[in-house]
Length: 215
Ligand code: 3DU
Image (cartoon, protein in one colour):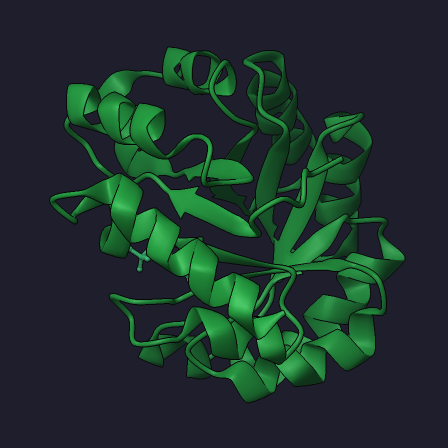
């Protein structure tokens, strides 16, 4: 179960390992989870999952997108390393998502809907509602929806009921944390605006305050 204290998730895409660890240490009390992606895992090695899990719950944003068997194997290895959550692409279909949900055990599974960047409109936006419904049907814990298009967060909230909505695209990509929360996101995911700041802790505190005001 995700903690829900600040509703801020750090996206730690810093590839200089010592810097990444020092940012994680500095902001661990400001965030409900640390999301890591291929840049840090490829730079630091998969043991970074375990290392970070001692500071905060870790969500592995591996955007898993394969046949069910491969998805299952990836999920098992991810959870074994100490991840509390894993992010999967939904466009591969219901059985591939189901395989992740089954292999994840107690870990949370999040399905990507419409992506936050301009190209997200090319292919993901037209099927985002179906992806969200499928996440619900397959027993995912939540979905990823774009803070860059808060009206889409609202639309997806109407479809997914109580599922968690995690919203990336705040700050560097132009979205606002307060807007995402007001439109129905449970958490905002923020990367560069925190780890590239000269004072990551203060940057995180600022966003936490903004979220608090929006609730
Ligand atoms: O733009 P930022 O630096 O705040 O990082 C956003 C993170 O969220 C980054 O890890 C990216 O891979 C992830 N993400 C999106 O930005 C947009 C999506 O639709 C899904 C994930």
